[in-house]
Amino acid sequence: MSQPRSNAAQETVDRVRQALGQSTASQARPAAGPARGERRDFDFTTLPEYEILKIWKAVGDLTSIGNPFYRLHDGRAGNMTSIDGRTVANFSSYDYLGLNGHPDVAAAAKLAIDRFGTSVSASRLSAGERQVHRDLEAALARLSGTEDAIAFVSGHATNVSVIGELLGPEDLIVADAVIHNSIVEGAKLSGAKRILCPHNDLDAFERALRLNRARYRRALIVVEGLYGMDGDVPDLAGLIKLKRRYNTWLMVDEAHATGALGRTGRGVAEEQGIDPAEVEIWMGTLSKTLAAAGGYVAGSRSLIELIKYTSPGFVYSVGLSPPVAAAATAAVDVMMREPWRATALRRNGQTLLEKARARGLNTGLSIGASVVPVIVGNSPQTVMLSEHLLERGFNVVPAVFPGVAENQARLRFFVTSEHTTDQIDAVIDAAAEGLQQIRSSASFVSTIAGR
Image (cartoon, rainbow, N blue to C red):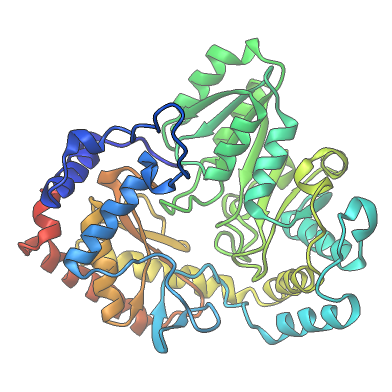
């Protein structure tokens, strides 16, 4: 979730502005509006929010650092990718089990196009329902260990729409402080009382519920099964005890956990030996392990029926594209048929985590599943390290302020079952050596960052 600007981050911004010959005081204020009666086309570059973009662009121009975001890839996402015609090892892909482009997955998508076309051209409520949707939802329910499931056209919209509809101003939402933006936006939309607890702090969750639960009609606890920024997991058994004690729903976002946790990749419930029925709302995405696009909710039949007729993100959206739905169904089938993929992913995640720690890199809280951060500590140096790695043949996209707090800027390594030990060894060696060079250099960015 977006973090407020820290003092350290503001100091960095101010130093950049000063280095560029800009007045910090004047730039901190929004541009004055037009005088009364003056006609002027609105210029979005005058917005305060746009200022930060101009600052980072100026830093990049002065240091010859390329923009690490929106890099144009030439082909399929996997453990390898092509950028500007150059093949590099890719550690910024969510293709955790190597199913993107799998022959069975591709064949299912092509067959669906032949039968249904590329679009169902309507919401499923009206005229868009197809067997391919029902097949997918049956597969997702089997995967999740629940009675039923429902698929949305967007993972982000799934959380926004479901939380926004199930909860209202008379309700309470207690969530982890580093929860995904889609959950934050859904909570805002609901109008419910929102409390963010320190990351994975069960005592804080309990305190929030004890002090607030009695005043609200419904309550929801929301966590991630595998945290996409930190690579760690919640104490699911502890959360289940809390939700029973305080009569709340529990929702677990499995976006990064599916494929990465548990012996067969079924997620955090399998990982921690929990009966999936103990959790009211399971949410996941189709765009990561399942090599497609969209999101889903799995749970009881009554929950799914309620969502099917009341959630705006489902009722008023077109049904999933047939080839996308068919691809995700086939991916579930392959994943269940070939559990060695989940084993290989976990082995690679552990290898990268251990290698990074051995080289003195800060991997934070990661358990070495599919997400391993390397925390650098400030945004300019993190961007420089990403550029350094790309020059050496590795694509690793940074997470910087305001996506994370300035002192938590990091590279996030997304590991797949397809990565080789040689690729993992090489990228960590390059990261450790590059970070040491960046921190010891007297470059412009290091100087203005002051850290």
